[in-house]
Each structure stands twice: as structure tokens, then as C-alpha cells.
Length: 361
Ligand SMILES: [Fe+2]
Image: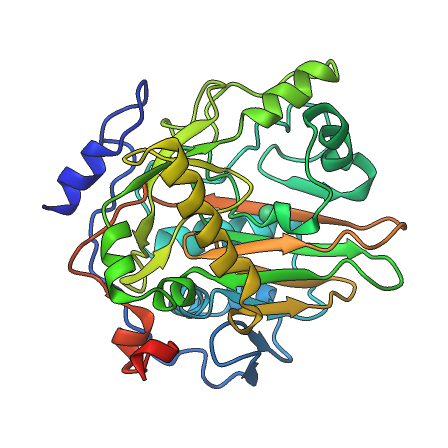
């Protein structure tokens, strides 16, 4: 089956077909080494990299800015999340970076920066800047309204997967922090795939799952707020259905690697299975992501640190262990309609690494 056919089959009802969300090319991108001269280290063998003594604003102003940002998009896509300490990047530059990461790594031309459906209140910021703040902590709002679990593990998610065209990259700069606490954790969708036995992975490939963000509408209705129903960064992301169907195993278009693409927060149902089979399968897959801390990285924020992550292959979670104010600005760029390419390889296959499974020796 071709990629185009796969995309067509997974288009949810009521959204445009194909024209607004297919990449011109699905050939994986190869790194050139353009960022190797900057000091950096890997957080774990699997996930996370930090660059030292680099300002993202300088990369954007460099003569070869496009080469550097394209390379950065590839590194983020390979390492899942990349950190930069104490950044002076402005909100305008943050938006520019979000667009450049997507454009230079080949996103569909109709995709831009996301406007979150809850961002409909008049503020002094562009709609494409999403304020992450403890001051309007929606989780507290929703917990009482929606009878949500008290377990912090319930919040593992990839950003906005309820959109037909979800995010490729997210850039978060945190400017206000509690004295301690508020760490963010990221888990690798690539490694989650590689932790599945070949037989189980094969069974999941080609399955599709419903991602549901209607809790935002429920919460808004209960609190007298309105949601933004206009176009949210791509013509396919419009209206307030806030539901989308995506492949359970997704090919990252930048790396060409397979990854698990379900998350505990938004993924509600595997459509080809019975409800009971779906519940059991999703619970197992969520456990793979959340209970294997050897595929996770935990980042302790300092003022003005920036994290950039690949939502297409990464699941993350905040740690709400603080009482003081915690606030930052997030830019979320949009990629393509997720697809599964049967010819794509896993990260460990592509890198020549053995799977870390007892059964495989
Ligand atoms: Fe998030």
C-alpha cells in the first residue's frame, strides 16, 4: 500500500482529503554535521541532547541559518527533545524558529503554527503563542468537572493529537519557575516501538486509533468559556469536533523511523479492535511508554531555558509538584497528516542497534 493510500484511508469524516496535509517528499533527511561544532551532550543513550553556550537567536541570524535550523530539526527528530539553557530568544524569534523547523524539514506548505482551541481569550500575545501557566491551570478545572484520575501519569501526551494535522515540533521557553519542582519528562516513541516483540509490533502496524480532545469543550462549557473554532494552523484543523484518527505506529517523516503514536491523555480507542481488546491494548502500550524510565529523560528547568521536542515521535508529561507560579510560552508547529509507511525502519534497525528485549537475547 502506498503512503498516499494510507493517508486517504485515515482521513476523519468532515476534513479535507489529502490536499492540505501531505508532504511533497517522504524521503528521510540526513544530518550534515552542521551543528557538531557546538558543545553538546546526550542525556541518555536513547533520548535527549543539550547544547551548551549556544543562543538560538544567533543560529537564526547566522549566514547559514537555514542549514543550521534544518540540521536542528533533524537532531530534534532523532533525539526526541533538545535543550538550550538560558536563552534570549524573543517571542517573534520563537515563532520564526517554529516555522523554519517545519518548513526546512519538509512540512506541507499549508501547515503553520497552531492556535490552541482554548486560546480564545483576548490577550496581548499572538494567537500562535500558547501560554503554559499554573495561573490558569486547566487540569485543576477539569479534574473536578471530568472526574479525572489523581495519578500524575494520566497526563502523558503528545501535543494536540486531537487535530487531524497534529504537531511536528514544539518549542517551550519557561520564564517563571518555582524554587524547585515542575520538571518535565519526555519518553521516546521510537524506543517504545523497539521494546515490542516483532510479532506484537507487526500486529499493531496499520491499526488506527481515535484521539479525542473533547474534554476541552466539556471543560469550557462547564466554566462558561468559548473555544476557538476557526482554522488552527492548517485548513484541516477547524471546527470543534476535536477528534482525529491516526495510525498506532507512525513513521516520522524526518528520520524515517517507526514510532508508537498513542498517548494516555488523548488516545481513546483502536478502531479495528473491540472495545475490550482496544482497552487492554492501549493500557499495555501506555505502560510501555510510562513504566520504562530507561526510555525517558527528565529535565530540571532553570529560568529562560528552552526545550524543543518532536511531537511526532515523543510523549511528555509535566510534574505538578509545586505551589508557586510556573509559566512559559510555547509555540507548536504543525506537520503532516500522520502516516505509516510499511517500508520504514525502527530506530534501532536504522542505527544497527540490538533491541533491548530479554526474549531477543
Ligand atoms: Fe504538552
